[in-house]
Length: 211
Ligand SMILES: *Cc1c(COP(=O)(O)O)cnc(C)c1O
Image (cartoon, rainbow, N blue to C red; front, side, top):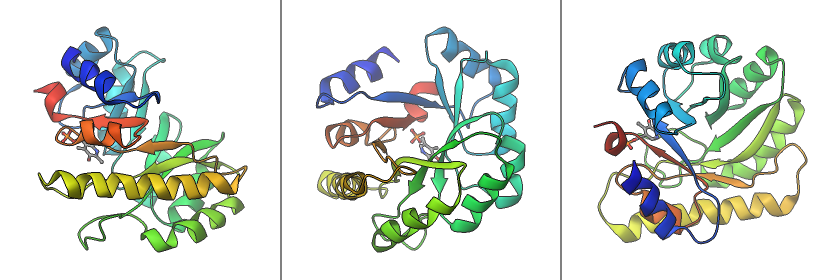
């Protein structure tokens, strides 16, 4: 934990960086231990996991949903989720809008690398998608999220993060009220120092924190 925080501090370029501890592969006991070490942001990729952690963590723990979200499961998490990082289709936006009793902070997930196996909106469609989100009053697009390809090639990782940042800057410049888009959710255990250098404001870190 200390090492991860130090690394973030060393690599950030002045921006605030929020550490999300991804607890999807561990039980509520580990999440509680992390809370006691000062972690307040948690990441889960399944509704069951999110609810299990929500049951034990104090109310000031913010639990982010980071996995692909089935439309029919929105209802289960909507009251306890701090932000949804995987908004990738309008049908999901419509369901979130329908089930929410407050404005929900969302990240639009972008498939920057274009790999067929990856979730997320194609780069070219991001602007139109975000414009379309305006029709849903309970959706606030606070940023963009991506998962980089599984590679150790630093230039590929850097290029992926840089492209997401450029896209974010373009959306930010539009000044949409429903999509302030100030944030960048990028960086995992094996690539977060590069993501932070490229402007990440949220990193989602599991493996190196919980093992
Ligand atoms: C599991 C997961 C992470 C964390 O990955 P690690 O490599 O364990 O740090 C981050 N983001 C998403 C979307 C994930 O599913």
